[in-house]
Amino acid sequence: MSALSIRLSPEIEKRLEMEVSRLKVTKSRFVQDLLESALAPKDSVALLMQAREQYGLDELAKTATVTNKAANVKALVREAVQKKHAAEKAYVEELHTATERIAAEPRPKYGA
Image (cartoon, rainbow, N blue to C red; front, side):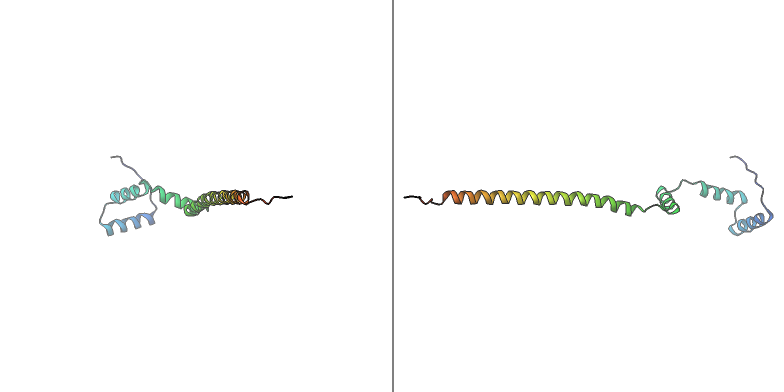
């Protein structure tokens, strides 16, 4: 373990002494705990949210909504194309049925 020397203002030294006596720990233990807390690995999600807030970036939920809108557009286009094909198919079948019906009808003989 290494040693570290720091200079403290009289006010901070007094506050440090009061805090260590209240917590019943040594100055070294108190400073070590503070350093461990400050240097601990951060939660990446919390850091991301903090950066988004700090820089005014959109939230993840709003970004996902945009993506979902794009997916919905694709689905709506597919549905429209399927309806169009179904309508065309129904029209062709109706036309074919009408043509068969007309062909099956007896034809009057002209000039007879």
